[in-house]
Length: 397
Image (cartoon, rainbow, N blue to C red; front, side, top):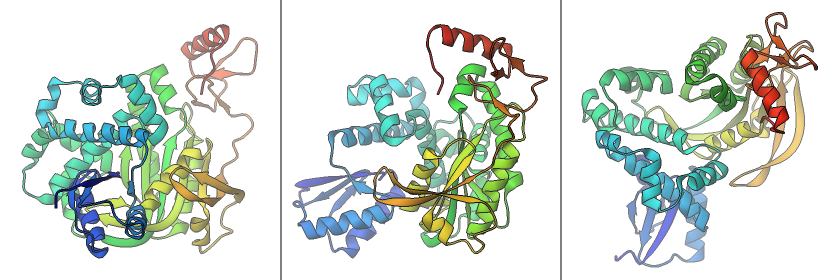
C-alpha cells in the first residue's frame, strides 16, 4: 500500500490512540498505515466505510478533520507533541517560538485561534500532553523515573514527582501500582469544575497567589468527596472527579459549591456533570463523554453546575437537591442538543464579588469599599485598577 490517501484524525495524540484506532480499523476490515494524527489508506474510502469510521472514531472522542482551521489546530497539537518528544533538549527553545517556526504563523494568532476552537490555551494543552507522556512511560515500565524525567524535560525526579502529584493526585509509584486494569469500558458519572475568574486573579495578584489558591482549592475538593467519588485529574484550576454513583457525585458538587462560597477572598466554582460510557486505560479516561462534560462545564455560570439529562436520569434520588431545568443547549462538536439541568447554591445577599479579580467578599469590614458605589474589593490595588479601568472604559470578564 502506497498510502495514496491520508485522513487526518483529531485528538489522535498518543500511542494509546493508535492502538484504539487500529482496533477500530480492524473491526471495519480497513487496511491502513497509522501515525499520530494520520490514517493512510490505498485510496479514499467508500462513503459507507467512511461513515462507519467516523461513527466509531467519535464514540471514543476522536474525529476526522475537514477544514483548514482544524488542520491548523492539529498542526499546533502535533508541534506540541514534537516539542515534548525533544525531552531535555526542548530547553533550548521556547514553546511559542518552536510552534511558530514549525507552522510559519505568528504565535499570537495561533494562540488566539487555538483558545477559541479548543476552549483551552496552548500552554495548558502542553501541560496536559506532557503529563500524558509521563503516564505513558510509567505504564510501559521500561524506564526508571530518572530516565522518564530526562525524556520529558523535567530538571529532576523530584520536580517530576511533585508536578505529577499536583496533576493526578498520586505519586508516580502510586499511579503505577494502581494502573493494572487497561482498556476497561465502563459507564460512570463525571464531574469537571473550574474556578471562575482564575485568569483575572492570576493577572492581578500574580502566580504565587494563584498557586496558593489552587492548593486551597484542591484541599476543599478532597474534603468534599462523597462515597466512591475520586479526584483523578487536575490541570491548572480544572479538576476532574469520577464516581460509579451519580448521586455521590451530585452531593460532591453541591458540597464544592457550598464550601468554596464560604471562603473569603476565594473564587466561585462552575462545572459540569454527565453520565456516560468511557474507556479507562492506566488511570486515564477517554471517550466522547469526557469531551461533553468539559463542554458543559465551560458554559456553566459562576456558582453553578450544569447537569446533562443523562446524568439526572441516572440519579436514584432525584429530589435530594434543588435542580432547575434550563432546556436544550448545543455544544461544540456534538450534533444533538442536550437537555441541561442546573444545580446552584444561592449566595446570601450580603456577599459581594471583587469586579477585578473575582474574589468573593464575605466580610465587608475587612474589604475595601469603593468611595462612591456599592462595589467592594479585596485590596486597595484592585480598587485602583477598577478606577483606572472605568476612566479608560475597560470592562472585566
